[in-house]
Image (cartoon, rainbow, N blue to C red):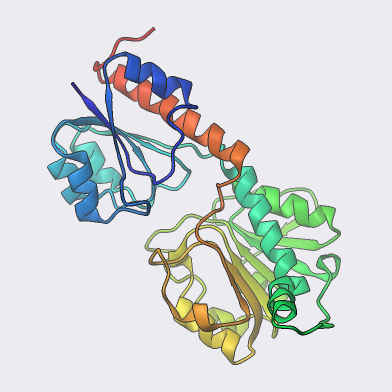
Length: 312
């Protein structure tokens, strides 16, 4: 019997017709029992030597992982990013890799908008003070009065730009791979964007070139009191430098859903100006269901191409 591994910590097997179909064809599912992102060693243990297909989360899929998973033929990411996957190693070991870039885009865009609005109106700060017995009268800012800088004008970035425009905000954007922008959105360089925007929202992929894209130098270029939002990948921001910029008052607020190390235990936990969520960008019910079904469909397609199951 061939195994299918599901490493993402939450996955609705019963509500997934393509996955149920694979089970009916004799496949056996092994699941992540830790309830969190797996380490490299835990991923190796989960896959073993008889797993042929994997529905992956954001655990590290490295050369070492692929070398140990001798039966693995297909990796289907439940999500859009592939920065946790060593694609060159996967190719060397003959492993097909798929992702679901469209399914989570709306959910992540809506979370980014929630974070922008919460940071501008200081909602979390007001909530904390009210629960402590105070009746705070804290003045926030209007999104309609802001210039929002979108870094990365892909599936999510485009949605956030359009949503910000609907609120009446001016939007500028930077994307090294985009030549034509959205109507009303000015494309510019990153230094100009950082200087002009009062809200900076990150929506780009993570790699060696974008590591700590926002660091102490970048924060020093931004408008005093500016807001930083990151729903993309944690490695895009130097978190220690961000905490320093918030604590000194250089930046007005930050809202992060992603971190370099997850679960997060860093200095931003002690910063009242930081809004932090636990990598829940795609965890809207409708988006998550679509993403899981697409991941299972991709897995089945890969297994058919590998000759491990027959096409219907």
